[in-house]
Length: 270
Image (cartoon, rainbow, N blue to C red):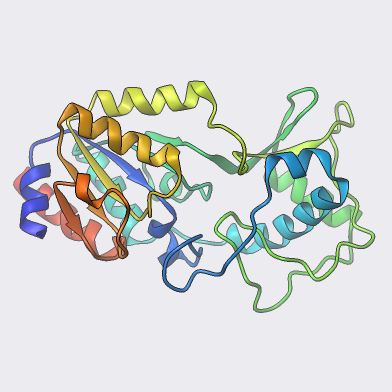
């Protein structure tokens, strides 16, 4: 099946769709699949309407972000960056918010669900660097310590032991509510961002899907568009997905193993 995948991708301009599975070897767990911890993610509705839920989110998000920020790109990220540099990969659509594709050197990355690097004011629209917000949180809450053996979530969240006394950061421009620049459950991917991803796929003649269970509809829609166009679809994931039948080749491997192997084969062909 690996030879079939190489044959399908050889000589084509490839768009890559990635999910949490590509970052597990960097120490960031996936939402689903073997070994994942059941979680109840924060929804946009709860975050915006429930002060207690918002406080819980900010405590956990801060604790997790400190560990999340230390994660390093792995061999899968690096292989995709190398293939982009070799003009094999046209660009990446990622469902991840960890920024590891950019840190690995990929230049054209559409972060479908946003990024943990930025925080936005929901009132005036001011944008803040997450590092500056983290510094303010620690100044306002000096008792916060990152616990040992934290259970990190794929979105950088941690379930905190307590939120008592925590001061939630607010906008320094208008004192409005701050929200990380990520798409929460219950929110839609911004239209402009989705259209940019669609344009990337339209300009390519193959789709490589790596490290995603394709449970979230935003990811499935790109696979469906590729299928309708009749371009090759290669899928890399350890577990089965609900769209395996749509793929022309399915590689049941980890991305840190399969992507460097694909890179070697396709670069050699080039």
